[in-house]
Length: 418
Ligand SMILES: C[S@@+](CC[C@H](N)C(=O)[O-])C[C@H]1O[C@@H](n2cnc3c(N)ncnc32)[C@H](O)[C@@H]1O
Image 1 (tube, rainbow, N blue to C red):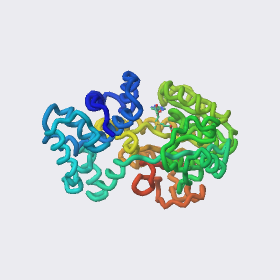
Image 2: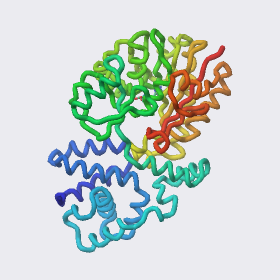
Image 3: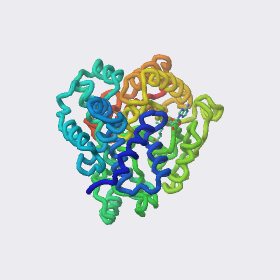
Image 4: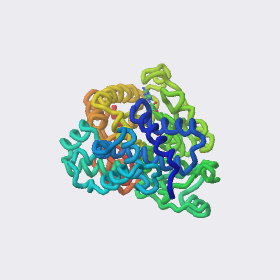
């Protein structure tokens, strides 16, 4: 079915905004749709698919756009739309545009030069090739350019995995257990969950399996004192609170009032009463100092480049630079050092990111261990053994979409020995 001709100028206008990279693409899209309430559901879906597709394949499509006719942003919009829905449904095209689009969309992209077909910014492509080699870098780039499935975590305070599978089947929503997280379900088609009783009652939360794993390896137990140092909107907080069986005390720290506010309704649904959200001004806030040496488990889900979530946020690869990654690393080092003071002797500090860059991961941990001789790394294979999770890892948790069908995640477990 043909799309209304207005879809092209809408896509053009949105692209112009999104490609300024002055804010997250999903925020720009939501604002645009709010400002254009007459756009129908189907049109919104097509426009969003076109914009996200262009962000994923920007290098290749920018290169194709060089060969076209007419204003550059129209060419980009037409390429993005034809990648999303094909050429025929797009109305209002000139015969030259139809001929051009039909020609370029047939180009075999696997034959393009490697850096171009990686659709990564040059600094990132070169970094990955230097570390992993060309084939592995392309494999990772390709996996990061695919859409992520939807994963759910079962809230064990409210239900178990079998009951939720049965409840979803009645909706009907088809799902299967995730391979690594004992509480995860992978939904086969992305349904609207918000109106399902299971969601409203807090029996399920949307959470990538990798993110569930990060909470799992913290190993928080009943009655413990636990701090989620960078809790944000609480994805991992909720999982930790349930692992503690709603006992003990779980502090959810964050510097962002807005993110902590988003935790509130999720907490209300979850049925947890052991969570204490605390807004802090910075990692050395006096509220942090009060808990020095008292905490059994501290999770630092550090602010990072987010490059491990490119399947969901493809704009991140264009918004990050060598400089922003260096700034992140300095911040991560400072947060980890401050958070470590909370851990009591015999307690554990878990450092995690959703990045696949060594400078945000292994290098931060190595620097920390060098300056904190009272901490020792607990190899990840031991931690996974404790949790009875069959997943091959060495010292660290390193998850990636092409190997584990999760977002990219890194984690290290550090124990205070003296
Ligand atoms: C990766 S996100 C956390 C995601 C969250 N744990 C979840 O699972 O939904 C990192 C968080 O760190 C917070 N943050 C940034 N600087 C911080 C600091 N100095 N101390 C504590 N949190 C900080 C950010 O506001 C952000 O919410």
